[in-house]
Amino acid sequence: MSGFIDVHGHVVLEESMGAAGPVCGPELGYYPDGTTFFRVGDWRLDGVPYRESLFMQAKLRLEAMDEAGISLQALSPNPLTYLHWIDEKDAANYCKIHNEAMASLVSEHEDRFLGFASLPMQNIDMAIKELEYSVKELNLIGGYIGTDFGTDFDDPRMNEFYAACCEFNVPLFLHPAPSGLDGPLRDPRMRKYDLDLVIEFSYEELVATSMIIFGGVTKRFPSLDICISHGGGSTMLHRSKLRLLAERRPSSPEWIRGPGEFDKELDNLWFDCHVSGQMEFDFAMSQLNTDRLVFGTNFGGWDSGAAHYPSEMIEKLNTNAKTLLRLDAAT
Image (cartoon, rainbow, N blue to C red; front, side):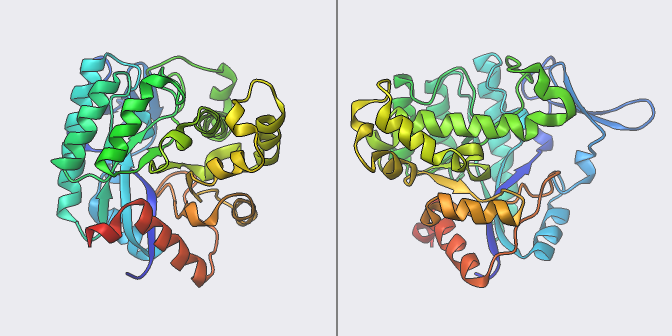
C-alpha cells in the first residue's frame, strides 16, 4: 500500500439528517439569500456548504485524497453530531441510521474507506449494543465518541463498555466536540473567536487522557486500544508535571506512584498526530510513544494539513495504523 493511512476524516451523511427528531435534527438548510446553515438543536453553523463539499461528496473526497497522497482513510462521525446529551432513545435511533449510512458509503469504496461507528454514550448498554451491531453486522472498525457525555472515563460504569471493545477487538477513538451543542456549555468565553476549537479541545483531550490513566483504565484493560485526537491536546506539554502529580500527590492512586508507572500507562495510549505544525509534530515525537502514533488530517477541515514527514516516518505511521485498525488481521 502506497501513501498515507489517515485515521482522522469526518463525514456528514445525508441519511442521518433529521434522524434525531425534528427538534434536534440535524438539519442542512438555506437562508432566503441562499447561504447555507447546519443546525443541531438551537445551535447553528453558518456558511459551510457541506452538500457541495468532500464531507458529503465521495468523488470529491477521493480526488482530494489522491492529491494529498492518502491511500486509505478511516471515516468518522462529525463531532457536531455526537448527540451525547439528547434523549437516549433518540440518540440510539440516530446512531443506528448514521452507522448504516456509514457502512453503505464504505462498502461502495472498500479499497479506500473504513468507517467508525457513532455511539449513544448516554446509555452504556445501548452503546455496547450499537457497537456490537456496527462491528459484527455493518463491518465498521470501532467506536468514535466525544470526551464529555455525562459519565467520566474512570467511572466504573464504563468498565462494561471497555470490556466490550476488547471482546469485539476494536479500537476506541476519542475526539472532543464544542460544548453547548446538545449539552451544557462549559465556558462561554470559548465561543468567542471559535476558541473552543483549539483551547477547549486541547483541554478536553488532556482531561480525557488523564482520567483514563489515573483511573487505571489502561491498567485494567491492557488490550484496549484508545486513540485520542490531536496528539492528546495539551498532554504532551504536561507529561512531566503529570508524572510528578502521579508520584507525589496523596490523591494519586497507590499503584501509579511507583517510578515509571505513569509513563507506562501513557505509552499504552494511541494518538493521532494531527497537530498542524512541524514544530508541534516534532515536539509530539519527543513526548509521545512513536509506536503509538498514527497519521491524521481532519481531512477537509479548517485546520487540515500535515507536517512534512520523511519517508521512513510514513512507513512507521502506516505500520502503526495497521495495528490500531486491525488491518493486518483483515488481510
